Length: 351
Image 1 (cartoon, rainbow, N blue to C red):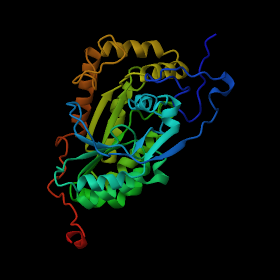
Image 2: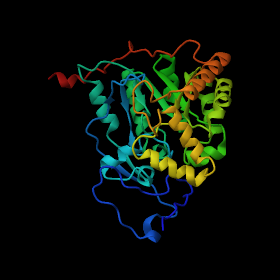
Image 3: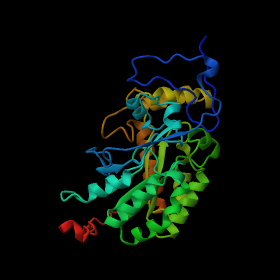
């Protein structure tokens, strides 16, 4: 008989399904397979490089840094989950309980920015996993990275669901004064019940709105990503989120449609059946309507927003709400790359 997964409090996934690169299936006794309260294990990692580069036409940046691999926020829809398969781990519970912290990130970044051939461009923090997930409170790797970026005057864009970013206002405020930082706080819904199961260890929606308010009040250019949009679940909340962040001082906004690459699609379907069984078939049917009949569309140009009449309706609703609220009125802020400076080497290095 097929075993039905049981929701684990504080976790998004309910199981550790096999990753696509595993050649052997895991065999475990049902009663010992999953702990009722699995603990988070943080492994310190000496990374070989720190700046990842991309040429995707869908992304507004070409350089990014991920201080952590894996994310304790446990967002069931996270498109970074499949990356744990490269480590021989599961994109399920392993992704949110087995966190790898790049302890030498600041050291590697300093060396990279000091290279004579380095060309200053915006560096994105939070492109895959959240730089302000709970483990950052102790590890402080994101904080160390920001200190290096501020020292070199290299601009940075941050995306987060964590209110912990307020800790670093002492760095973000002076960076903002020199046009070196912008922050996007991701909020998919103001419904706390949806967020509690969808993003179990991220800050509550009202707390993220307050983070937008505090950042904006401190002069840090702030926006929001209404992401991901999930039909029949949080798509109705788009305007409410935009109104809340606009009132809190946000200047910019964007949105993305739910993406279900690789193992994420099965994890999400399982989550739907556990939490919204009466909506599950309707949600997946509408997603396929917006994805050319498939669960996922990996194509540049359509993967972020979808296609078809429902996707077009979302785009129109978003544009009208932003126009009414004055969001994106000045276009996306361009950060200042002219202030970049490599610290001079110590005098002793000349001899």
